[in-house]
Image 1 (cartoon, rainbow, N blue to C red):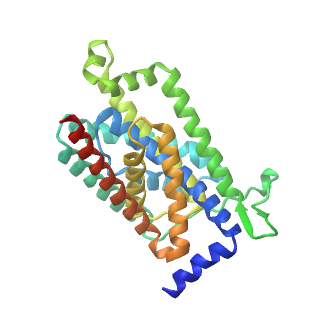
Image 2: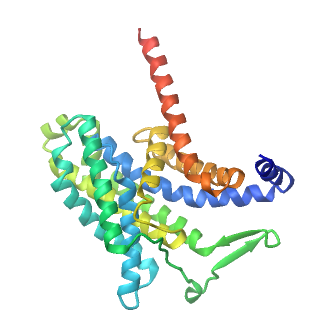
Image 3: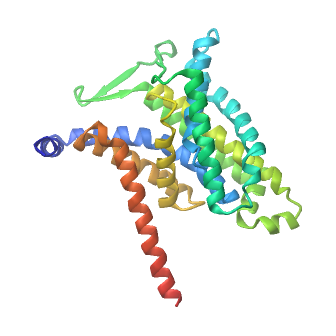
Length: 311
Protein backbone atom coordinates (compact mmCIF):
# COMPACT_ATOMS: atom_id res chain seq x y z
CA UNK A 1 0.00 0.00 0.00
CA UNK A 2 2.88 2.36 0.79
CA UNK A 3 4.29 1.75 -2.68
CA UNK A 4 0.96 2.63 -4.29
CA UNK A 5 0.63 5.82 -2.28
CA UNK A 6 4.20 6.72 -3.17
CA UNK A 7 3.46 6.30 -6.88
CA UNK A 8 0.38 8.51 -6.59
CA UNK A 9 2.36 11.12 -4.68
CA UNK A 10 4.94 11.10 -7.49
CA UNK A 11 2.23 12.03 -9.98
CA UNK A 12 1.17 14.93 -7.79
CA UNK A 13 4.63 16.30 -7.05
CA UNK A 14 5.94 15.92 -10.60
CA UNK A 15 3.12 16.73 -13.07
CA UNK A 16 5.50 16.15 -15.98
CA UNK A 17 5.23 12.42 -15.24
CA UNK A 18 1.54 12.61 -16.13
CA UNK A 19 2.45 13.96 -19.56
CA UNK A 20 4.84 11.06 -20.09
CA UNK A 21 2.15 8.54 -19.12
CA UNK A 22 -0.45 10.18 -21.34
CA UNK A 23 1.89 10.20 -24.35
CA UNK A 24 2.69 6.52 -23.86
CA UNK A 25 -1.02 5.80 -23.49
CA UNK A 26 -1.91 7.64 -26.68
CA UNK A 27 0.75 5.75 -28.62
CA UNK A 28 -0.35 2.30 -27.54
CA UNK A 29 -4.03 3.30 -27.59
CA UNK A 30 -3.79 4.19 -31.29
CA UNK A 31 -2.86 0.58 -32.06
CA UNK A 32 -5.64 -0.73 -29.82
CA UNK A 33 -8.09 1.43 -31.77
CA UNK A 34 -6.78 0.08 -35.07
CA UNK A 35 -7.44 -3.53 -34.06
CA UNK A 36 -10.79 -2.57 -32.54
CA UNK A 37 -11.93 -0.91 -35.77
CA UNK A 38 -11.45 -4.23 -37.57
CA UNK A 39 -13.53 -5.96 -34.92
CA UNK A 40 -16.24 -3.31 -35.27
CA UNK A 41 -16.38 -4.02 -39.01
CA UNK A 42 -16.85 -7.77 -38.56
CA UNK A 43 -19.25 -7.33 -35.69
CA UNK A 44 -21.35 -4.72 -37.43
CA UNK A 45 -21.46 -6.29 -40.90
CA UNK A 46 -21.51 -10.02 -40.10
CA UNK A 47 -22.70 -10.04 -36.47
CA UNK A 48 -19.73 -12.24 -35.57
CA UNK A 49 -17.87 -11.61 -32.31
CA UNK A 50 -14.36 -12.62 -33.30
CA UNK A 51 -12.49 -13.98 -30.28
CA UNK A 52 -9.44 -14.59 -32.49
CA UNK A 53 -8.99 -10.87 -33.11
CA UNK A 54 -5.88 -10.59 -31.00
CA UNK A 55 -4.34 -13.68 -32.57
CA UNK A 56 -4.52 -12.00 -35.97
CA UNK A 57 -2.62 -9.08 -34.43
CA UNK A 58 0.09 -11.37 -33.08
CA UNK A 59 0.15 -13.24 -36.40
CA UNK A 60 0.94 -10.01 -38.24
CA UNK A 61 3.76 -9.35 -35.81
CA UNK A 62 5.27 -12.75 -36.50
CA UNK A 63 5.00 -12.25 -40.27
CA UNK A 64 7.10 -9.09 -39.95
CA UNK A 65 9.52 -10.68 -37.45
CA UNK A 66 10.06 -13.78 -39.61
CA UNK A 67 10.51 -11.73 -42.77
CA UNK A 68 13.11 -9.53 -41.09
CA UNK A 69 15.20 -12.55 -40.06
CA UNK A 70 14.84 -14.56 -43.26
CA UNK A 71 14.52 -12.10 -46.16
CA UNK A 72 17.74 -10.28 -47.16
CA UNK A 73 17.73 -6.48 -46.78
CA UNK A 74 14.25 -6.56 -45.26
CA UNK A 75 13.51 -3.35 -43.34
CA UNK A 76 11.10 -3.56 -40.36
CA UNK A 77 8.89 -0.87 -41.92
CA UNK A 78 8.27 -3.17 -44.88
CA UNK A 79 6.66 -5.56 -42.43
CA UNK A 80 3.52 -3.43 -42.30
CA UNK A 81 2.44 -3.89 -45.97
CA UNK A 82 3.75 -7.48 -46.03
CA UNK A 83 1.79 -8.41 -42.90
CA UNK A 84 -1.27 -6.66 -44.35
CA UNK A 85 -1.14 -8.85 -47.49
CA UNK A 86 -0.30 -12.14 -45.75
CA UNK A 87 -2.96 -11.70 -43.07
CA UNK A 88 -5.48 -10.72 -45.73
CA UNK A 89 -4.91 -14.12 -47.35
CA UNK A 90 -5.19 -15.87 -43.99
CA UNK A 91 -8.39 -13.99 -43.21
CA UNK A 92 -9.91 -14.99 -46.54
CA UNK A 93 -8.98 -18.64 -45.96
CA UNK A 94 -10.37 -18.53 -42.42
CA UNK A 95 -13.62 -17.09 -43.69
CA UNK A 96 -14.05 -19.72 -46.38
CA UNK A 97 -13.27 -22.64 -44.08
CA UNK A 98 -14.91 -21.56 -40.82
CA UNK A 99 -16.59 -18.16 -40.56
CA UNK A 100 -18.87 -18.61 -43.57
CA UNK A 101 -20.44 -21.58 -41.79
CA UNK A 102 -21.37 -19.69 -38.62
CA UNK A 103 -22.68 -16.33 -39.90
CA UNK A 104 -26.29 -17.45 -39.86
CA UNK A 105 -25.90 -19.40 -36.61
CA UNK A 106 -26.60 -18.22 -33.07
CA UNK A 107 -24.22 -16.16 -30.94
CA UNK A 108 -22.90 -19.13 -28.96
CA UNK A 109 -21.87 -20.97 -32.14
CA UNK A 110 -19.89 -18.03 -33.50
CA UNK A 111 -18.20 -17.46 -30.15
CA UNK A 112 -17.29 -21.13 -29.88
CA UNK A 113 -15.93 -21.22 -33.44
CA UNK A 114 -13.77 -18.12 -33.08
CA UNK A 115 -12.57 -19.25 -29.63
CA UNK A 116 -11.43 -22.49 -31.25
CA UNK A 117 -9.66 -20.48 -33.94
CA UNK A 118 -7.89 -18.42 -31.28
CA UNK A 119 -6.59 -21.55 -29.56
CA UNK A 120 -5.54 -23.15 -32.85
CA UNK A 121 -3.67 -20.08 -34.13
CA UNK A 122 -1.93 -19.56 -30.79
CA UNK A 123 -0.72 -23.16 -30.76
CA UNK A 124 0.40 -22.97 -34.39
CA UNK A 125 2.43 -19.84 -33.69
CA UNK A 126 3.91 -21.51 -30.64
CA UNK A 127 5.00 -24.52 -32.71
CA UNK A 128 6.38 -22.39 -35.55
CA UNK A 129 8.10 -19.59 -33.66
CA UNK A 130 8.52 -20.82 -30.09
CA UNK A 131 7.17 -19.45 -26.83
CA UNK A 132 9.82 -16.75 -26.24
CA UNK A 133 8.88 -13.10 -26.58
CA UNK A 134 10.16 -11.46 -29.75
CA UNK A 135 10.60 -7.92 -31.00
CA UNK A 136 12.28 -5.90 -33.72
CA UNK A 137 14.59 -2.94 -33.24
CA UNK A 138 13.65 -0.12 -35.59
CA UNK A 139 16.79 1.86 -36.36
CA UNK A 140 15.80 5.09 -38.12
CA UNK A 141 19.21 6.76 -38.14
CA UNK A 142 19.57 5.71 -41.77
CA UNK A 143 16.48 7.80 -42.55
CA UNK A 144 18.08 10.91 -41.07
CA UNK A 145 16.14 10.65 -37.81
CA UNK A 146 17.13 10.04 -34.21
CA UNK A 147 16.03 6.88 -32.42
CA UNK A 148 14.98 8.84 -29.33
CA UNK A 149 13.87 12.40 -28.73
CA UNK A 150 14.06 14.04 -25.32
CA UNK A 151 11.99 16.88 -23.92
CA UNK A 152 11.64 18.73 -20.62
CA UNK A 153 15.34 18.53 -19.82
CA UNK A 154 15.41 14.81 -20.58
CA UNK A 155 12.50 13.91 -18.29
CA UNK A 156 10.39 12.81 -21.27
CA UNK A 157 11.79 10.47 -23.87
CA UNK A 158 9.91 9.86 -27.08
CA UNK A 159 11.14 6.82 -29.05
CA UNK A 160 10.98 7.37 -32.78
CA UNK A 161 9.59 3.84 -33.22
CA UNK A 162 6.46 4.75 -31.25
CA UNK A 163 5.97 8.00 -33.15
CA UNK A 164 6.33 6.22 -36.48
CA UNK A 165 3.94 3.54 -35.25
CA UNK A 166 1.26 6.13 -34.47
CA UNK A 167 1.77 7.78 -37.86
CA UNK A 168 1.47 4.44 -39.68
CA UNK A 169 -1.66 3.59 -37.70
CA UNK A 170 -3.19 6.95 -38.59
CA UNK A 171 -2.36 6.51 -42.29
CA UNK A 172 -3.88 3.02 -42.36
CA UNK A 173 -7.01 4.13 -40.50
CA UNK A 174 -7.45 7.09 -42.85
CA UNK A 175 -7.05 4.82 -45.87
CA UNK A 176 -9.69 2.42 -44.57
CA UNK A 177 -12.11 5.28 -43.85
CA UNK A 178 -11.69 6.74 -47.34
CA UNK A 179 -12.12 3.29 -48.85
CA UNK A 180 -15.35 2.72 -46.91
CA UNK A 181 -16.75 6.09 -47.96
CA UNK A 182 -15.73 6.36 -51.61
CA UNK A 183 -15.34 2.87 -53.08
CA UNK A 184 -18.16 0.70 -54.38
CA UNK A 185 -17.14 -2.15 -52.09
CA UNK A 186 -17.13 0.22 -49.14
CA UNK A 187 -20.64 1.32 -50.00
CA UNK A 188 -21.68 -2.32 -50.34
CA UNK A 189 -20.22 -3.09 -46.91
CA UNK A 190 -22.14 -0.22 -45.33
CA UNK A 191 -25.36 -1.25 -47.07
CA UNK A 192 -24.94 -4.84 -45.91
CA UNK A 193 -24.32 -3.68 -42.35
CA UNK A 194 -27.57 -1.71 -42.40
CA UNK A 195 -29.75 -4.47 -43.84
CA UNK A 196 -28.25 -7.58 -45.44
CA UNK A 197 -31.57 -8.78 -46.85
CA UNK A 198 -32.31 -5.47 -48.55
CA UNK A 199 -28.75 -5.38 -49.88
CA UNK A 200 -29.27 -8.78 -51.52
CA UNK A 201 -32.51 -7.55 -53.08
CA UNK A 202 -30.60 -4.62 -54.58
CA UNK A 203 -28.15 -7.01 -56.20
CA UNK A 204 -25.27 -6.86 -53.73
CA UNK A 205 -23.35 -10.12 -53.39
CA UNK A 206 -23.37 -10.30 -49.59
CA UNK A 207 -21.24 -13.45 -49.57
CA UNK A 208 -18.49 -11.52 -51.35
CA UNK A 209 -18.97 -8.61 -48.96
CA UNK A 210 -18.65 -10.90 -45.93
CA UNK A 211 -15.45 -12.50 -47.27
CA UNK A 212 -13.98 -9.08 -48.09
CA UNK A 213 -14.90 -7.65 -44.67
CA UNK A 214 -13.35 -10.49 -42.69
CA UNK A 215 -10.22 -10.42 -44.87
CA UNK A 216 -9.93 -6.65 -44.39
CA UNK A 217 -10.27 -7.08 -40.64
CA UNK A 218 -7.51 -9.70 -40.61
CA UNK A 219 -5.28 -7.45 -42.73
CA UNK A 220 -5.81 -4.45 -40.45
CA UNK A 221 -4.91 -6.60 -37.44
CA UNK A 222 -1.84 -7.89 -39.26
CA UNK A 223 -0.61 -4.36 -39.97
CA UNK A 224 -1.21 -3.42 -36.33
CA UNK A 225 0.83 -6.46 -35.25
CA UNK A 226 3.69 -5.47 -37.56
CA UNK A 227 3.76 -2.08 -35.84
CA UNK A 228 3.49 -3.58 -32.36
CA UNK A 229 6.50 -5.88 -32.87
CA UNK A 230 8.61 -2.76 -33.53
CA UNK A 231 7.38 -0.99 -30.42
CA UNK A 232 6.73 -3.70 -27.82
CA UNK A 233 7.00 -7.50 -27.80
CA UNK A 234 4.91 -10.35 -29.16
CA UNK A 235 4.39 -13.88 -27.93
CA UNK A 236 2.08 -16.64 -29.27
CA UNK A 237 -0.31 -16.43 -26.32
CA UNK A 238 -0.54 -12.65 -26.06
CA UNK A 239 -3.47 -12.55 -28.48
CA UNK A 240 -6.13 -12.75 -25.77
CA UNK A 241 -4.96 -9.44 -24.30
CA UNK A 242 -5.56 -7.62 -27.58
CA UNK A 243 -8.90 -9.38 -28.07
CA UNK A 244 -10.07 -8.16 -24.66
CA UNK A 245 -8.96 -4.61 -25.39
CA UNK A 246 -10.71 -4.64 -28.76
CA UNK A 247 -13.95 -5.83 -27.12
CA UNK A 248 -13.71 -3.12 -24.47
CA UNK A 249 -13.25 -0.43 -27.09
CA UNK A 250 -16.03 -1.60 -29.42
CA UNK A 251 -18.48 -2.22 -26.57
CA UNK A 252 -17.79 1.21 -25.10
CA UNK A 253 -17.88 3.08 -28.41
CA UNK A 254 -20.67 1.18 -30.14
CA UNK A 255 -20.77 -0.23 -33.66
CA UNK A 256 -20.13 2.18 -36.51
CA UNK A 257 -18.87 4.94 -34.20
CA UNK A 258 -15.35 5.53 -35.49
CA UNK A 259 -14.66 8.67 -33.39
CA UNK A 260 -15.84 6.69 -30.37
CA UNK A 261 -13.50 3.80 -31.25
CA UNK A 262 -10.55 6.20 -31.48
CA UNK A 263 -11.44 7.95 -28.23
CA UNK A 264 -12.00 4.66 -26.40
CA UNK A 265 -8.73 3.26 -27.76
CA UNK A 266 -6.75 6.26 -26.55
CA UNK A 267 -8.60 6.17 -23.24
CA UNK A 268 -7.87 2.53 -22.48
CA UNK A 269 -4.24 3.06 -23.48
CA UNK A 270 -3.90 5.93 -20.99
CA UNK A 271 -5.79 3.98 -18.29
CA UNK A 272 -3.45 1.02 -18.63
CA UNK A 273 -0.38 3.24 -18.39
CA UNK A 274 -1.70 4.94 -15.26
CA UNK A 275 -2.66 1.58 -13.78
CA UNK A 276 0.78 0.08 -14.42
CA UNK A 277 2.44 3.16 -12.91
CA UNK A 278 0.32 3.15 -9.75
CA UNK A 279 -0.16 -0.57 -9.11
CA UNK A 280 2.79 -2.04 -10.99
CA UNK A 281 3.37 -3.46 -14.46
CA UNK A 282 1.92 -6.80 -13.38
CA UNK A 283 -1.55 -5.22 -13.12
CA UNK A 284 -1.55 -3.72 -16.61
CA UNK A 285 -3.49 -6.59 -18.16
CA UNK A 286 -5.91 -6.64 -15.23
CA UNK A 287 -6.86 -3.03 -15.99
CA UNK A 288 -8.23 -4.12 -19.38
CA UNK A 289 -10.33 -6.88 -17.79
CA UNK A 290 -11.69 -4.50 -15.16
CA UNK A 291 -12.58 -1.97 -17.83
CA UNK A 292 -14.39 -4.67 -19.82
CA UNK A 293 -16.48 -5.62 -16.77
CA UNK A 294 -17.27 -1.96 -16.08
CA UNK A 295 -18.37 -1.36 -19.68
CA UNK A 296 -20.55 -4.48 -19.69
CA UNK A 297 -22.21 -3.47 -16.42
CA UNK A 298 -22.81 0.04 -17.78
CA UNK A 299 -24.34 -1.32 -20.98
CA UNK A 300 -26.59 -3.69 -18.98
CA UNK A 301 -27.85 -0.86 -16.77
CA UNK A 302 -28.39 1.31 -19.85
CA UNK A 303 -30.46 -1.41 -21.57
CA UNK A 304 -32.62 -1.89 -18.49
CA UNK A 305 -33.33 1.84 -18.34
CA UNK A 306 -34.30 1.85 -22.02
CA UNK A 307 -36.67 -1.07 -21.44
CA UNK A 308 -38.34 0.79 -18.57
CA UNK A 309 -38.82 3.86 -20.78
CA UNK A 310 -40.33 1.71 -23.54
CA UNK A 311 -42.81 0.22 -21.12
